[in-house]
Length: 386
Image (cartoon, rainbow, N blue to C red; front, side, top):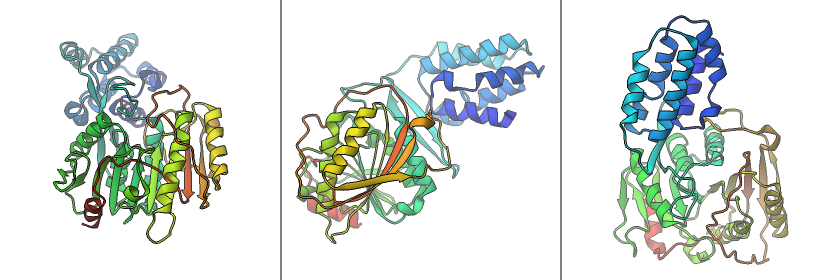
C-alpha cells in the first residue's frame, strides 16, 4: 500500500468514525519500520484528528482518545523521531468533556461531504435510528454510480433514519424532490438537524396542521421534505399526495415483524399512483439473519412481487465492512395483487442482530403503507409542486 493510499484509508475511516480494528494498522507498522522520520504520522494526524471537518464536526471524545492512544503506540514502537503534535492532541482531548452526540463525516466524489450528528449509543431514545448503518452507505454508493435513477425525479425514502442516504443523493444525483420519512419523532428531529447541518435551509410549512410534521428545503433544487410516517397507520389517501417516481429504503429489514408492514406500505403507494404507473423501488439491507431474508423473499412471492439479483456496483466510496459471501443486489418487479397483508404490531422494532452484509432490491411494483401523522394532503402537494 502506498503512503497516499494508507493516509486516505486512515482519513476516510476516522472521518466516518469506523471501528478502530478496521484501520490499516499493519500497513502503518510496515511503513514506520522503513522510515526514520515522523512525516507519515504527522500527515495521518492532519488528515484525521486535525482534519477541518473533524475540527468542525468531531467524533466522540472517547473515540478520538482511543485512536490517538493507538497511534502513539505505533509511533513509540517504531522508535521514530518524537512527534510533539501527537501528545499535544492527546492532552487536548483528555481535557474535553464527552457528549451524548458525535459526528461522522463522509467524503463525496464531487469533493463535497455529508456530515451527520448521531447519538453515541446504538440504541437511544428507544430506537436504533439515531445512527448510520452500513446498508445506508451501500445504497448511497449505488445511487451515486446510477444517478439517472434519481435525476429530475421525486424520491420517497422510507425509514430515513438520520439522513445519510438522502443527503448523499440530494448532493450527487439532482432529484427534483426528495421526501425523507421516519416514524420515530426523535429520529425525525435529528434528521431535520442534519439537513440543516449540510447547508440546506429547512423552512417549516406554516399551513400544515402540525408545525413540525412537514418541512421544506428552501433551495432551487431539489425540494426536500421531512415527514413522520407510520407504515401501519397511514392511509392510501395520505400517501397519494407524494406520487413518487422512486421509493428507497436502507436497512429496514432487521426484524421479521417489520416485513409485512413494509410490503403493505409498498402496495398502498403503488395503488395510489395517479397515472397508474408503478414507482421504482430500491431496498438495501444487511443480512443479519438468513431466516429473516428468506421470509422477506417468501412474503414478496405471496403478494406477486417477483425479484432477481442485480449486479453489484463497482465503487466502494464509503468505509463499511463488506462480507462478500453475503453481499448481493436483487431486483424485483411487483405485480398488482388484491391479497391483504396482515398488520404488524411493531412498526418500529428495536431488535437487531450482529452480522454484516448488504443487499439491494429493485422493485417496480404496486406496493407500500406508511402513516402521515395529521398531515394535510393538499399542503404536501403544493410543496412538491414548488
